[in-house]
Image (cartoon, rainbow, N blue to C red; front, side, top):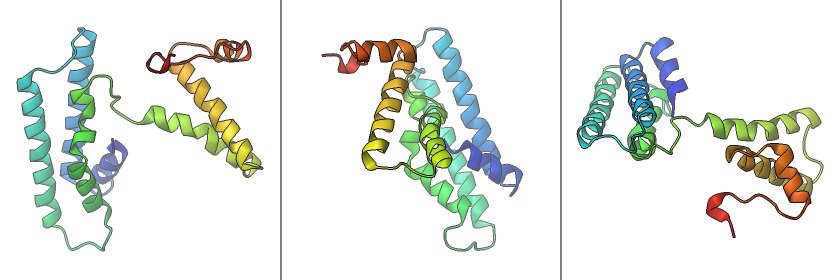
Length: 171
């Protein structure tokens, strides 16, 4: 989600539509979280339809608000964000359709943070094979951790010739 971009536009640039859309998406997340806590697997058809209509109405509100602003330079942030939100509507609302889809991309950002930190500390990877080995190991450990294994257990299994495979890839 582009919540950071929406927050910036709402607070720093005073775009009302960005504030409304951010609050709306947070509300939908709360409804989904509540449904998951109650062991639900999907929103009701009425909720789904209402949330979709409301999302589209907020995008229309954004169009109206941006049309009233002076013509920005090409590549202006709010217009680009609005285009991404409209073109990617299905992806933006995926967490609402499938409760297994996370609301944000924080987990993905955390997964790549270590690679960037390694580059920052050592300046770069010394070879392509070193970078590939580092990423392979980090990916293996990250996948194991997301499936409830500790790093030590995952490494021990790999060294003993019985590496962990996520359930969807198990031989």
